[in-house]
Image 1 (tube, helix red, strand yellow):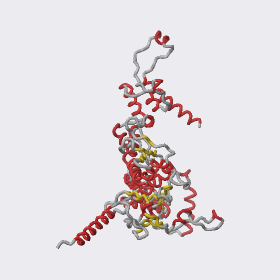
Image 2 (image 1 turned 60 degrees about the vertical axis):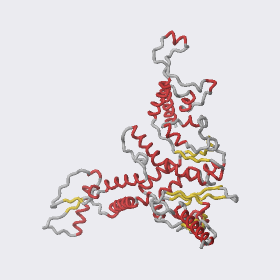
Image 3 (image 1 turned 90 degrees about the vertical axis):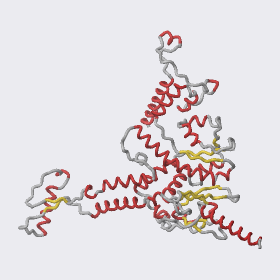
Image 4 (image 1 turned 30 degrees about the vertical axis):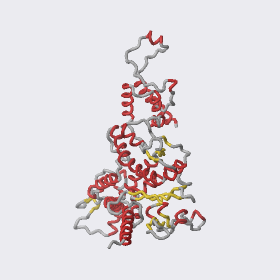
Length: 485
């Protein structure tokens, strides 16, 4: 017999299971850490420091834009537009934004732009982005506390170190759970406060408190197994990093604890000197052959053999292993040697190509991830159809720019104001011919009569050549000003 109550109970159970399954599969839910994030944070040394710092510095000097996409009804990003055009002049973009259906950036005094520029009273946007990328690369998880006002709108933002945050399961008071701030130790300063021990400010005040999940914005590198934790590059390459640390420790121990005399002299079998005689011989030997002025001198002794005691780097294999682990750790974070400050030589074009690869394949994807999370979690509080974008500093070869400009001038596809914008000059406007195409002038020689009639005694250069010369002169002027400083 059909029972409607049994069917409702079954439906209720199925819906509850679906909700539980969606919650479990959703990212950002509090759970238990899969790795020791404090230990990962302590690995911010050596080549790991070099690699992560290179990425963080690029994130620090990146540009942040906020767009209102309600005008064209689509979230068309500038980065996608740049990829379609293959090459783009940044100054022209700011001059002609909105002409081709592009989203217009919001002014800096907009409330969302203000909080992105200054997330909290003690931190700038550049420092804030540095911290977010630092935590993401070290622990695979970046936790941002969006502090709300009484209306639920974010008024301040802070980056919480992943190592001091412990997940808290949902309770009646915290339906979604949260994270408890548990610094394992507080730093104290004895001398700076007249002998009184004081806690370390902010961490001392929030220690032991639980921040609700609704106030937290969590960005992760997805873990292949656990949805409630991130997979960090440091954890993925833990063996490489540990091996590099052991090499450094062994090399330091060799220098600190190893016997450092250069040679040993053994006496003949028929000789049996006393300790006093050996010490007197050693003192006389050091006095006669010690010091830099005796470098390279020949030594003649009555002993049977002279044996070298110093272990060479080749014997210890320090040099090769040091370079191997350096390259492995840099590759772990996607940082080329050029970006890490290691000059591997090569051509001028290869230098720019390496930096451009670093920006395109490593830095910009990280910034896109942070921008997408801000767009979905932060931007809706300040209005509808708002898109946040974070763009890394552009690395373009000046020689390629010159060639492309010359090609654009020959093809007559670049306007006067566009050319002036690239050179950093103000636009002329349509009334002064700024919207006209740059025309390539004839390269035929001009007679002296034509020069006099034009009121000039110098031949007119083609537009491409004139731009090239002006660019070189501008670079020379900048070099001279820097030299005077």
